[in-house]
Length: 146
Image (cartoon, rainbow, N blue to C red; front, side, top):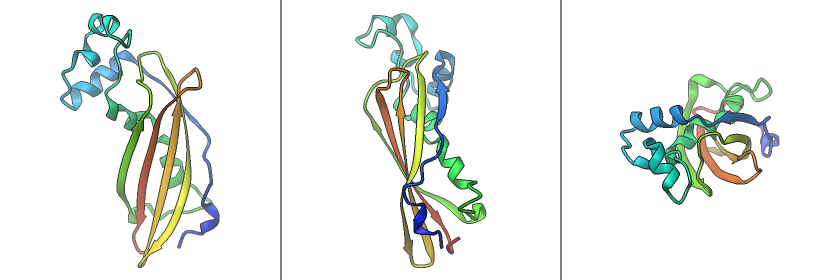
């Protein structure tokens, strides 16, 4: 079982620059056709003053720190037994091209359910102005314990 002493462990931040073309590629990949994501002139004339990223684009930048947990040599998660349980995002501010997003993740809970470890992970993402834009939460299950 994963030691509860790791609750609260924070991982070094990840920095991701939001590119206009990356946003468009992502929007196309998920079937989003809104001009907020694709049409530069529309975006610039909108209340946002530019295009915005689709909300689920947060999956690209917000939970990068989770990979650090997966491969943390101190915790030694058996990756072959790891299952992604659930994920949610809280969107606080729109993300736009040129934003530089810094995401910091940490383990917020470790519980045992039967023979499994259930790990709750949270990442907070701020833009270049220090404004909190997204909070991501994910639950991972290590089957059979660690």
